[in-house]
Structure formats: C-alpha cells, structure tokens
Length: 259
Image (cartoon, rainbow, N blue to C red; front, side):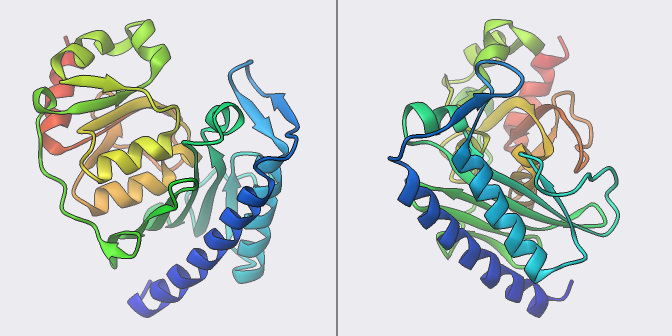
C-alpha cells in the first residue's frame, strides 16, 4: 500500500478507537454479563461482544471486501493469509476488565497477503495508543516512539505467563531468575506496550492471532523480535507460545529454552 492510503486508513482507525474507547468507558460500571469460554479463567462479557460488533461494522463499512478475524467470532472464518485481513481483539485482558476495571486493551491490525501494514494497541484506562507500521513508523500517543534500547535479559524485567511459570514450561523459571524480575500483567496488549516503551525487555506467553496481530507489526517495525518460543518465524494465523524481546534478550532467552 502507498503511504497516502496508509495515512488515510490510519486516521480512520484512530477515529474508530476513540469511539470504541468511549463506548467501553460509558458501560464499564454497568452490570456485566460474564460467561466462560474454554475455562473459568477464559472469560467473555457483553462488552467484548458489543465492542467487536462495533469495530467489525466499521471495517465492513470502510472496506466491504476485506476479511475480518475477530476473537469473539463476529468476523469471518479466516484460514488463509491471502488478501486484506483485519484482526480484532475487542477487549484484551478480559479477566482484568471484569475484576479490576483496568489493565486491558483494544487491538486492531491490518495485514495484506500476510504482511503486516498497520497495528494499533490502545490501553483503554491509561488512554495510551501505540500505533503505526513499517512504512509510516511507530507512534506513542501520536509522537514518534523512542527507540527501544537493546537491553539483555539480565539487565531488565520480563513479562511472563503465570501458568507457564508455574508449570516451568520451556525452562520459564530459569528465564525469570536470569532476568532482574518477572512481571505478570494478564494482558498481551499491556505487556506488548511495556516492551515497546522499554519497560520490559521481553514477553512470553501462549498467544492467538488476535493477541499478537497488532503487536507483531508494531514490534517488528520498532526493531524488536517476535517469534515462536523456539525462534521460528511467527505466521499471522499462528496459535502458539510466542517470544517477544529485544534482540539481545531474545538471544538470551533462546539459549535457556534450548537447554
């Protein structure tokens, strides 16, 4: 896509996100309808569903022939990377949303033939938007993102999945011990923002396309590495253990995972 087309899309998506955030905040203190999906810790609320319907409707109106992959299933069945594909996570960190009313994000990504064009992660309560892509750069609330220092694992904090640490998957306990400390935020979007802003040197968790779609675009555009946990290429439609880190920390983690 040409720069002028990307800039037009960028402006439009930011408008959707402002309206989407207003919708969520307007309803955040209402009585939520909460149900479980795969387990008692995998929640969905009426707000997740309403927000996805809203974003999907905006995309349909803006780009009728594009396909949409949404976490709550209001988009399309997407099983190939061909053409224009939007990826939507209406509320990332639903448990946080339900229990804390904080630390959750809205994420939107646009891919073209499997190549990331634009990504958006909005920290709803913090009102912080990370946005951009490889052709237009990455922005933090509209300002160019400060370059991320290439910090090693031993010199930084790392975001980890609680269950992966408890079960010591991929030597996760050793990874935590080699870092300055681990953090568990409970939202991929919030963790990814923290890596992009240099607050964490990395993040590891099991993720699905809507969890990492936007982050992959932003992080790779910012010079960070996002791969599978064993360092292989991460496809747009993957569902797997994901490693995001600075280049130095990424190398450090792989040596521990491979032990």
